[in-house]
Image (tube, rainbow, N blue to C red; front, side, top):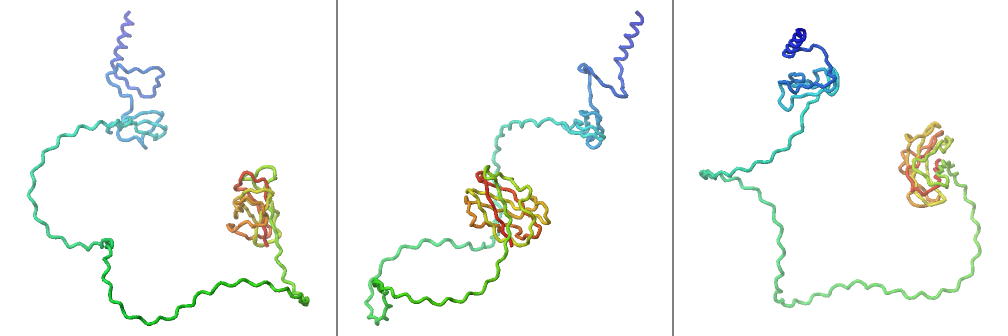
Length: 314
């Protein structure tokens, strides 16, 4: 019985003392401080912890004692030394209703009239106003006396020529003359340029040509000749619209989109190969030996199934 009373006294004595914990503690159950006289669960600091205080556990909170509420609590969002700290502030409260306006005060007495200021300088003349409408015409005056007869004027210009009469009947055809001598044969003209061509075929005549369809491998072998693009023609077995991006690479290399030189466009629904296709927008029209051309469909009407472009150069 004596031993139990001594243990109770020790426990009672320990409950009345302040304990300092030097080290780490982890509470796995419930920490109930609802009956405590005072509670300060957060570390107290002065000055902002940003860029200064270390953080070992994400969610730590510090109380800044020298700050003005509500800017007093900081929370750690990223562990580190120093950690990343953000200020905890609640949302701004709604603006209160405006109070009623007070009664207007009585008007004060009029002050004495000030002295008249000096006359200012004369301002610049303003622009002229718009002219007013023309007044009505006055009445006709009395007829004057008849003047003397004037001299005879010069003869007037000749009148227009009368219309031509009807053509008479054609006379009888005369006898045919004898045939003239055959002229000498002219000299042979200079030889024309020898043309070369890249032929670009598109589609398989069965399925509509799609955007992005290109040549794999390039449709042309390395050019065995050099020259300048002189004309481009187009033909197809059906009407339709299509735009073709042309690529050119030197030295028998495989062209890519980085080697783009221009676009050939058929905008009207036609399949004639007799009309030329414009290539005025090409960045270059020069073809060198071993150059290779390739192509890629940039737009189509979704109906066209075949077409051919002939690119002539010499």
